[in-house]
Length: 71
Image (tube, rainbow, N blue to C red; front, side, top):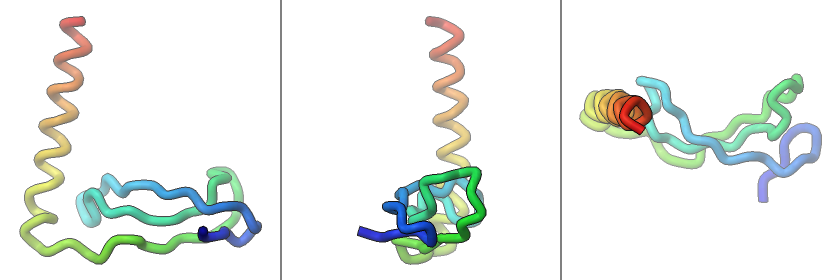
C-alpha cells in the first residue's frame, strides 16, 4: 500500500500520453488537492512500444465511437 502526501491510499492510474502510453503510476486520490504524490509503477517502455501503442489507442477509441453511433 502506498500513501500520498496527505496520508490517503494512493490511486493507481494508467497514462494515456504518447510519451508514456499504458504505463501505470501511483498518485493522490484527491484530484483537486495540492498533493504532488506521483510514482511510476511500470518501467519505461521501449521506443518501439512508444511508437505503436498511441496509434492502437487512437484506433480503439475510434472504434468505440463508431459502436456508440450505431447503438
